[in-house]
Length: 303
Image (cartoon, rainbow, N blue to C red):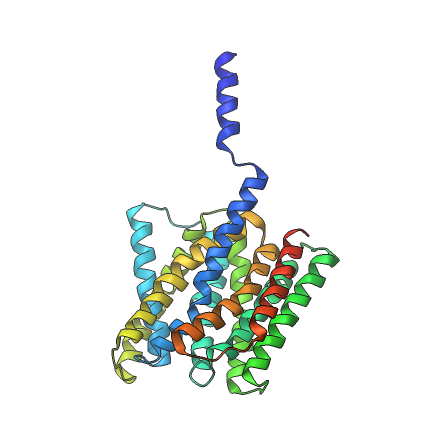
């Protein structure tokens, strides 16, 4: 009996409390948001050296090689067949669709304008999650989410002048496919580690991304610069792999709708990086919007 009690106590200590799990999940999801906030400025850097198709294909290959190496080194077994459709949605959404569409948009759009997509992404992800999982957040949650999205939209559209262009079509399409990929990835992260979700999605795309990279590099000119190489490495390893690893783990811990609302801060972070790395101009409205967004995040986290 004494041994049994000790084992039970050890198990109780080893299992994180729900509050601790939510706290760690929020930290992980926030780290993912920080990583994603650098994606657009890094893409703009990458386009200095590579064409849009080359940049997306090469980033996918590099990320898949790193992910595949980790899966092999740790001898992770192949995912069960029932998880393959979900992994395919993740691959099409966050590995191929979102990077390709946003890269095409950034050829003619500034990073501050592209941040409109990220401003709408939390709301779109929450809607997609509700439709996919049957979860129904409270009215308070939706009110705060809509208020936060409206604040971000007002700020980012005001920064870009509010004009709709062909790039906006790419951005809105990217919004839809990314929300689907986030939702499916968050669901899969509950049954397998988050890094394996994105790892297998990247490996699943390798038979397409590898020949695509070879063809794109043959047809698009390459002019290597320090900025271009740094941008490629970040979007491949930081945004495409490491950022999604912590993001999916965070979503699995705190839930897809709640994690998605942390992304309300992402456009503001992107605008800061754009000013620091690309020299884009920011107005005095930034701190006011930041306060409004943080309030909305606090409300959604408590709802």
